[in-house]
Structures are given as structure tokens and as C-alpha cells.
Image (tube, rainbow, N blue to C red; front, side, top):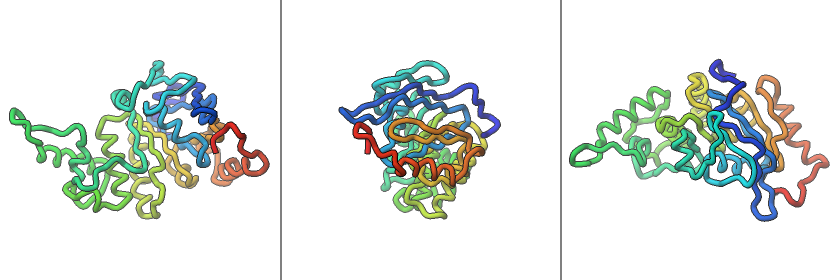
Amino acid sequence: MTETTDPKRSIVRAESIGKRYGPVVALRDVSLRLAPGEVLGLIGDNGAGKSTLIKILTGFHQPDEGKIYINEEETVLRSVSHARELGIETVYQDLALINQLPVYLNMNLNKEKLRRPVRFLDKKAMREQATVHLADMGVRIPSVDTEVGYLSGGQRQAVAIARAVYSDARVILLDEPLAAMGAKESAIIIDLILELRQRGEVSMVMIAHNFAQILEVCDRVNLLQHGRITYDTNVDDTSIRELTDLVSAEYRGRGIRSDEPE
């Protein structure tokens, strides 16, 4: 755990969250906490409820039960825009980047700088700020003028994460940022997350299936199974073997209940 992390308080806390889609129980009595500066790994099999929980924390879905606290204040996240106003950003696998636009314009989507009084795009200012910001975060790309579509998968993911930080996010929710990446591309994102973790200026929840990566970059890990968090521990107190055994245990005689997501 980073030195800036205070386990006694939280920047985001969910208490007894429940969510149904008709007869299907996606989440039941889920409680989760994220301390300032902490990186929390969220693991679990497909259908366990991870994406549903992320969508609730980002304001995309409303929970049927439970409460959410932001900086220890009870908060109803009315929408994704509301969550962003509170400093919560999500980076999904599809990244929401526009491949035909250069990096610096992607970094400034929906917050473009304008020259006044004529109100033309101030491309020079956006280029300069994007260059400084990416360099400060250690993100290496050919140029901020490069179209995003020409970047590698790891570089695109790094730009998406950098854009979230650039938007003054205090909490970043990462939905499988390392999925379908090779070792070289994954290393770009791992290094970036480790850099952000070292700074302690932003808290992160990272969904991932690779336990080695979770143990490398996270402070703590939660296991979500059949809509419930069944395991919560510091990464120093667990191992790949233990996490593998916990996840595989449900296939050794526990079965999936008929009212829970498959």
C-alpha cells in the first residue's frame, strides 16, 4: 500500500449495493471501499458482476439497494456526467478515443481550448499542454500530432488513462486495461499505473483477470463471485496460487445458482 493511502478513510465507499435485472441478480449486498491514493484490484469470473459494479460507481446505472459515499459523504450518482463532476472517470476497453483525430485533440475532447474573441480552436495551446502532460506522466508516443489509430494498443490505453488524469479525476475505474495485450504493450500500462500509484494523487479500481498483474500494481484485491465480494485482502497477504484456488473453488462443487448471473 502506498504511503499516501489511509485505510481509515475512503474516497469512494459502497455499502450493501444490490442490483437486479428482472429475475437476474447482478449484485447482492456488495460493500467496497477505496482509500485515497489506493489501487484496488477487482477480480472474478465473467458474469460475476464486476462491470455492473463499475457502471454503478460511474453513475451509468442506479443501484436498487445500498448507498454510495464520496469523500465520506452519502451521494446519489445521478449520471456519468455527475460522477465526472465529482472526479470519477472510467476507462473502458473501447477507450472512447477517436482514431481519426490526433492525440492532442483526443486529450482535449469536450474541453477544447478556444482563441477569443473569434472562438477558433487554439490548437497550439492544446498541443503544448498535451505534450507537457504526457511527458510528465512518462507516456511515450511518436508525437501528439499522430492520429490515435496509428498508435499501438498499449499507447492508446495510456493516452486514455492520461486523458482521465488530465481531466482532474481523483478516481479512475479501469475496465480490463490489459485485456488482449502482449507483454510489451502491457508493460506500458503497468508502468503508467505504477507511476500514478507512486504519486498517490489518484485512486484506481482495476478489473483484470491476470493475477500476476494485479499483485504487481495493486495495493489490495477484492474477489467478486456471483454478485458478492467474497474476499478482501492486501496483495502482500495473498498469492497467485491462493487467488487461483479461490476462483476455481466455485467450479468444484459449488455450481451457479439459477437466480444469479451466468
